[in-house]
Structure formats: structure tokens, C-alpha cells
Image (cartoon, rainbow, N blue to C red; front, side, top):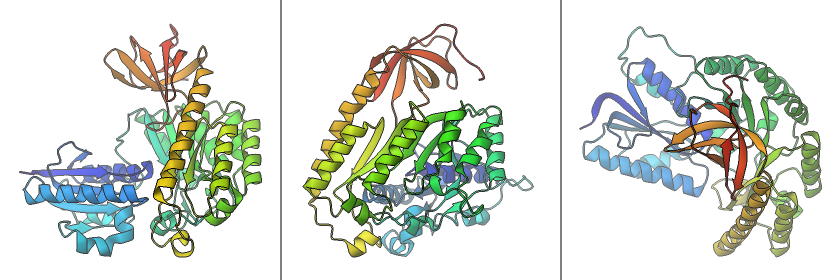
Amino acid sequence: MFKKNKIDVISLGCSKNLIDSERLLKQLEAKGYVADHDPENPDGEFVVVNTCGFIADAKEESINTIIGLGQLKEEGEIGKLIVMGCLSQRYMEELKNELPEVDTWYGKFNWKEFIAALPDRNPGNSKPAAWERNLTTPPHSAYLKISEGCNRFCAFCAIPLITGRHTSRPFEEIEEEVRALVKEGVKEFNIIAQDLSSYGTDIYGRQALAELIDRLADIPGVEWIRLHYAYPSDFPMDILDVMARRDNVCNYLDIALQHIADPVLENMRRHVDKEGTIRLLEEIRRKVPGIRIRTTLMTGFPGEGEKEFDELVEFVKTQKFDRMGAFAYSEEDDTYAAKNLEDNIPEEIKQHRLDLIMALQEEIALELNEKMVGTMEKVLIDRIEGDRAFGRTQYDSPEVDPEVIINDPENLAPGDFVMVRIDKAYPFELEGSVIPDTKMEEN
């Protein structure tokens, strides 16, 4: 039997979705509900699924999750089933017919209507600000969304169809959120957006990422700032000056490049060519020596013949990206590519190419990690498991990048900064020892 006054929130997809779920949790708590995030055994009076609709695998996961919860509802284990997020934003009418077990549907932006419709079980409680949230990440680390939407309209991407046009948040609102999170103990801020490069263009008439990060770096208690999801076309070069100058802005950049062969880039509508991409990477590395670059690549997009794939392989070999993810192209409804380009590369070839570049990247990752053996790195401890601690350097983002494993972590706790000597290297992990008397409470 489900529990009255309890609402379970299940969050699927990316960190941007997670922030929406965290805001939802805060709003539910303010109305007097017990809100549980990603419970192992959902049993709430309401269960809310925050869906992802970016690629085929994510859509399938969202639908399977809804179907499974529908079964629990039929068995009386949960009460009402609510769906929100990207998948319902895009396919709501179709899904209503296919999934009648769902009681109410919301999109990505109108989920606050669910809050408004809920009976208030804590009358008179103050209403949280729109940006306030209950963190689901470790208490020393948080994602920080600085804008929503995207104006790029790459041929393969459905994000603008889901999120709409690019909309930046004002400096002052973001700073207020960061100050509040610092008071709660957050030390590390992972800056996210669909397109960091365009931050500020809509509200300030100029690229303002560098100014924003400079302002955030001034806030006492902000130990690390890390940048995710920049766009290579019209890249804001002044952010590199901030990164080089500010000690608490990590030497790390997540910039999705997708491909390097000009015919493929043109088909993708990326508004940048091979020469421009390589020139940009050279300038990034020149201005911020030692920077770690994370990128994402795609195999099997229309126009990628053997020659173009060979170019991509050579690009990976020569650039030696510190961090790299990749995926095989799958056609997304209503995108430019789906309407105008023939998806004529067999799935087995797409996957074979993907496997090749990921195997190559594993070799590169090991080579680069081995160069760190013997160095001393500042490490943020994320968790303690038995007789081992797990942490990350400034070059590593949560969940997607390598961890540093520390044996015998005496007197360490999550949220501590400590100096670690790197002793061993693996493709996607490092192992190290704490340098005595280097634990840092505040820096």
C-alpha cells in the first residue's frame, strides 16, 4: 500500500534534468510532503517521472520506467503516476494514447502546475524561490544551470525542438543561488547549459560567460568551477583568460566537436570547419597550458564514408583528448537530418566505427594517465567505501570522468580536499596516496 503524504521523484537523463528534479523536490517539501528522490522501491502517494527524450535509448528507458510504475500502480503499491520532462514535452499527445496508466502529463516547463494543483499540507509555509532546490548530489558538489535552450539547430539534434530558444539567467540570480549553496556546504560547481558559448547574448547583447565566471569565482567558498557543454562555433575566447587567471576555475573544458571531416560537419550544420576546429583547439591549449579537454564525437552520420571516418580516427590520434565520449548516429524525428538527409549507413558499420574510436581512446587515456604517475594533485573526496576513498582532481567531472582511488583513507571525509601522489594509472582510473598533513579545510 502506498504511503500518504509521500511523493517519489524519479529523474532520468542528464544533469540539466536533475536540476529540475531538485527544484521540484524543494517545492514539494515546502508544501508539506515527504519527497524522496530515485527510491529503490517507490511507494509514494504520487510518483513523478522526469523523463529524457534526447536519443532513442533515453526514450526507451523513460517509457520502460513508466510502464513498470504503471504495474506498481495497478498493484496498489503507488498512488497516482505523474510524468513530466523532455519526452512528454515532445510527444505528449502520442504518449497519452499509448500510456493510459499515467494520471497527469506535464512538459519540461509547466511542471509547476503540478505543484499548484497539489493540496497544501503545510499552510503558511514560505514559498521557495524558483531556483531553490534540494541537492541530490553529494553535499559538497552541485550542478549549476546558467541557461536553457539552444539556437544552434544542428542537423541531428532535437534539443531545440524540446527546450526552445536559448534563454540565459541573469548574473544576479545565479550569484544568489551560488551564495546560498555555499552556505549549505557546496564547494564545487559544475556549470552546465545546452550551449555555454551563447550565454548572455539574449539578455546582455553579448557573450557574457567570462564575466559570469569571473563573478562566481569571487564568491568566498567557491573552490572549483568547471565548465560543460561549450559550442565550438563563436567560442567565447575571453573565458580562457579567466580560466588561466583564476585558481578556482578548473583547467577543464567540455566542448562537443561531433566530427572533423568537412563534408560531415557541413551536413551536421555545425557552422565550423576542420581548419577552424583545429585552430580553436590550438588556441585553447596555448592560452591554458595543461588544460584537459573533454569532447563528444559521432560516427555514422550521413556523409561519413571511409575517407571521412579515417579523418576522424586521425583526428583522435593527433589531438589526444583527455576525455572523450562517442555515440553512433540515430535519426531523431523532425530534425533537419531526418527530413533532408538519407540515413544510409548500416547500423553494424556505425557501431563498428564507434567501437574502433573508443578502443583508440582507451589507449590514449591510459597513455595520458600514465604521465600523471609521480605527480601530486589536489583531490576532492567524494565518498568513502570500506578502506578506500574515491575522489577527483580538477580535471575530472562527476560521474563521467576518472576517479582517484586512495587506499587507507585515515581521517578523510567526503568534501575534504587533500594532496595526493599518483602511484598507479589505468585507462579510466588513477590510484594514489595521501601526502601527510595536506588536508585542506578551506582554500
